[in-house]
Length: 267
Image 1 (cartoon, rainbow, N blue to C red):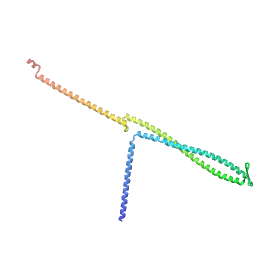
Image 2 (cartoon, rainbow, N blue to C red):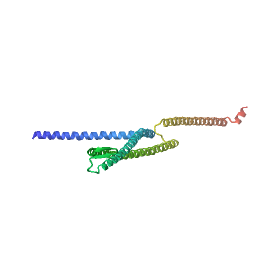
Image 3 (cartoon, rainbow, N blue to C red):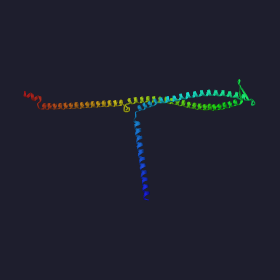
Image 4 (cartoon, helix red, strand yellow):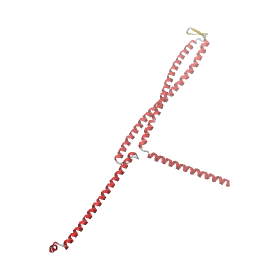
């Protein structure tokens, strides 16, 4: 009983460990996926367009490969077609020869058969005709196989031509799209520059930002100086007005105490 409980406990621990490991693995994969998405999202569009152009340029070797396969199939198909034509002509010659031999064997009672200027034993002519017939059948089967092979080659040739045409059409379409994207991005960057919208983290945007910071700092310090000059001027005016009032008051007081009449009596 204790052994069973121990085994069960080990199985539970192993299951929990496996589940925990799987859960941790999922989180690691999810974090990697998120990081990859963030990195991809931070790549400037200019770089992505350059990569598109680079990927398009890599289609040329693939096209050359397709052209090579197409040329190989064309050469093989043309050669096979010529071989079939020659073999078919040979079959027709054999057929005529067999027809001539067979016609010479019409007389079942003849011991010799006359072929051209020669007289040959009937049995030898029959044996020769039988051998020719077996060779003819084999050659005829070979021609049939060649014709089937030629049909398959032509199907493959048509498939390669269709694939190549599709690749060329797709390449032209993608090239046009990349050019359109590049033009649209150029317009967008121009509009962003005019409207003071940040354009990625390029050298141009950093220069513009630094220029704006310097320009703002200079304007700020100039304004501070102007304000400071204004305060000094106001202070001097205030002091001048105070001094004038003090002098006027002194003059008034002296007039009241030492008027012109009193100055006259003393004289």
